[in-house]
Image (cartoon, rainbow, N blue to C red; front, top):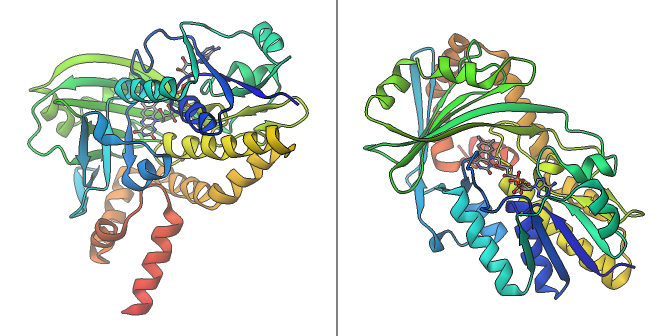
Length: 367
Ligand SMILES: Cc1cc2nc3c(=O)[nH]c(=O)nc-3n(C[C@H](O)[C@H](O)[C@H](O)COP(=O)(O)OP(=O)(O)OC[C@H]3O[C@@H](n4cnc5c(N)ncnc54)[C@H](O)[C@@H]3O)c2cc1C
């Protein structure tokens, strides 16, 4: 039985896993090809309060912008879902990764940055270490050990601007399948006067930069851009749909986070579900090393915890992808008439639709 762990990838999932393994004094090394983690920044970091607490991320250690809800735009109409309380925080991804890296180093984990791991390195490392692929959507570990791919990818393009926003507590979401088929566009305030603009398009619907160029012509986006200054921009990919398998007990290999496709289909948010994967994997690895538990237990426990919500996120994405902007605007009118916007403002949960549905029916029965 191997007693060391080699984690490929020092993104959120890899670092959360390393930090957790060190609580059990397990010998762990994290490798990342980048010299500056989270750079160049190609993804935002909006995380729910519940999710942050579940992952043990202390958002007070770095600048964080409070978010209270979302404004949804479609066909020139809009609907606001606003909570009285803070629902989530947006943070700078580089700062978040650096904070976790420091926490890992404090626990005694080895973190080797600026080192790309190739297939032949995996063969050498696997002689004395359990291998964890936390290396994102294009995982070398998944390819080398023949884990089958995610269902689909969303191609994104996003840009960071310096901008003065009156209200930094609301994210704006734009639905128009002529411009962003299979996904949506967003304006998301971050800390320190930074605002992110982005879009996603479902795989097979063309190039994300071409879609972004159309997105910036939408009236509300043009209005925002009039007083904004470009800081950084680029394309990235979100895997949608987790792999059929993400643990192999015989080879002692696991995948976590985007490498496993642990991402919610509605928004492409993967930190909470991938982070949860990392925590479950850490527990199973500990039991594997100390008592011979099967690593496949990790796969079973993650699905037990998240399968219902993952399926519900898929259904919601299927609905908004099938509707054109006018139909979404009509749907929003109906939601307002039924006061669902108010309900979501008070009882929404951006990660767990199953909890929202339960609350909805409980309230209806109580009325
Ligand atoms: C535009 C955009 C916006 C997003 N917004 C949000 C959001 O607001 N909230 C949210 O929860 N999620 C969001 N996501 C999703 C989120 O970014 C991912 O789910 C999350 O980063 C997954 O973390 P990870 O550690 O699994 O993988 P990654 O963050 O992809 O990290 C993988 C790491 O592995 C390293 N690596 C890869 N291959 C190798 C190799 N061969 N050798 C060494 N190192 C390697 C990479 O350098 C990288 O650092 C967004 C994604 C995008 C694209």
